[in-house]
Length: 144
Image (cartoon, rainbow, N blue to C red; front, side, top):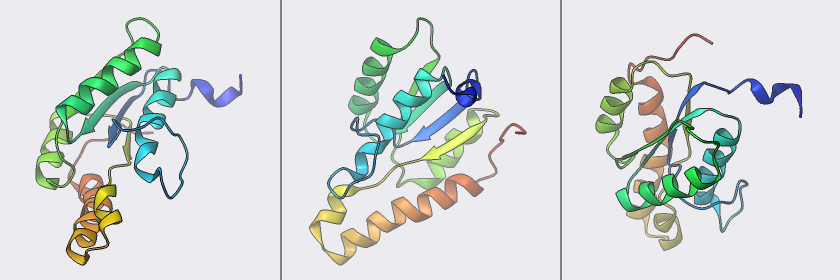
């Protein structure tokens, strides 16, 4: 194994948008599916993974899939909250206490497909402003 693989072991990583798909790469048709691939990679590297996603069903499904392939007693958690509600996301992040890394993969891909300008603006708000608000929301990152 490469020498960097132990760098995330035991680290608390919050992943916003990590419940969908299993395609750990970007493509036009799968841009919203990178989140679960990231979650799988983090679990395989023994990180403490906390997924935040908009749908409780998706979160529960993702947790079930991750736990099936994870080492026993792997710390994997999930929270249902839409990334579109940035103030709630910030409150959740504050409530999680210090963590080591924040990964933001959330998007509203269906909005992108529609081509409707209001839907596109909403998708931009979630992808861009959601990430900005999450990263600047007075969260407590552990020193790296």
